[in-house]
Each structure stands twice: as structure tokens, then as C-alpha cells.
View (tube, rainbow, N blue to C red):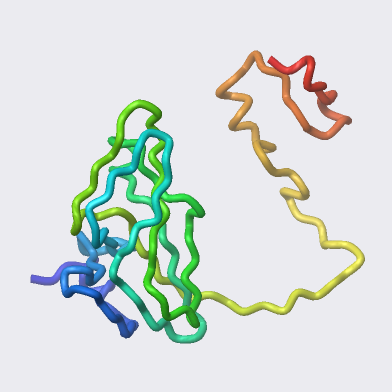
Length: 181
């Protein structure tokens, strides 16, 4: 039976895929999911605070104009403290080697044990633009300007009594390292 979600999100791009074992084929868990699950091909233990580079058994040939991005699985991060480093990891269209995932255990007390076949990350394939970077003496203005790193106020809301560090001198004075809480 079809639904608006499944009707709109049928595969539109065939990606040639080489697998070390058939079970390594990336799959979407639900209709409408953006990321296809990648699995580990080996049993692995990621100790407290450690990082491990894990094979997926998947190699792909993306067409020009596309890239794949390896992103963490939210459940592993929330429940086990396991995330991916270099996230998102970029798989360029010209890369033909095995996709590997560098996992990091953020829990400093407990190891995370994974078995071959466990889902460890997601692979999101997107169309990407190739751009020409054009040097100019000055950029055009925008509503945001050069504000970044908490300039929209979200971080101050979490810590209302902390002085703002590194903001524009005209709005808030800078705080020296000795004055930081």
C-alpha cells in the first residue's frame, strides 16, 4: 500500500555498491528516512573515551555532482554516548574505497560493545554544487552579518549569569582568561 511519503520518496538515484558481505548493504529503516544505516563488519569494543575506526564493508561509486555524508545515529549517541568523529564525514564522488566510520565513546566510565551487523552510523547522499570562489574586496551586507558562535543569544539563555566572551567590543567588553568563570 502506498502513502504520500513513500510515493514521493522512491529511490531516484542508482548508486553502484560493492559489498564485502551481502548484509553490509545500506538500508533505510523507515519510509522517508534521509539516512541509510551503515553497519559494522567486525565485533568491536570502544573503551571509555576512546575512538575506533570501524569498517562497514561498503564501497560506492557516486555520480559527479553528489556526495555522501556519514552522520551519527541519534539513538547510539543518546543512549550509549557513542558518536562519530569528523561528522559529517564526507564521501566524495571520486572515492572508491571502503567507507569506514570513526566512532568515539563519549562515556568516560563504560565501554560500548558492538557486534558485526550492528548499525553504527547513517549515510546521507546529497546533490552538491561545485562553486567558483571569486575574490572580492568586501562582501555584501546581510541581516546576520559576521555574527556567529552564539551571536543569536541561545548560549546566553543557558547561562544567564555568565559574562559573554568574545562578543563585539561595542556591545559587551571582552573577558580575560583570568576573569572567566
